[in-house]
Length: 198
Image 1 (cartoon, helix red, strand yellow):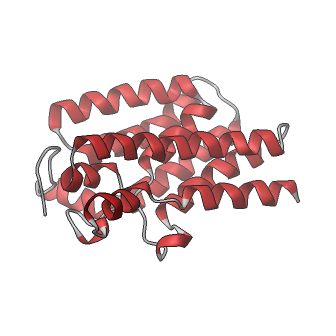
Image 2 (cartoon, helix red, strand yellow):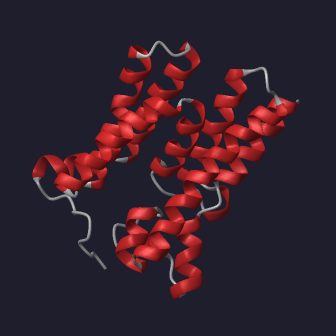
């Protein structure tokens, strides 16, 4: 019972869309109808600017951190439940119950979840992703690299099998949510960081 409650709470926590709320509070808009149409930190940057974007990024990551800790508090000895809580927060971010199941792509929340579970692999993959974004200005490419490299690094560092399965599932989530970005990257039509699309 505690397992189900902890996963449910994590989903409801993940469903809080800070990008949507920032758009409503700061400009009275539905951010999903502006820019790329995504309720995440990158689109918040395009539509609302740096300050709100950084705040949304940190809060979205914090959701992931808190979700993992909810699992640890409720069921401290079950790694699968702890991972499930993290996954539930990401699912909530991507498909939020409060906002018509139309959310973001879950990268910041994924970072929060996985950094709490396996910090060093996320740090390595994250540094590669940041370098890629700095060189290309393609946030989507950096996000895909982050999630794609994470399972490989987890294997190389011989981390527990549940963490590998979690990273593989999150990579699938990321690639599915970024499928339109992948098409644009291949065609050379992807928006670069700093470019406004209103």
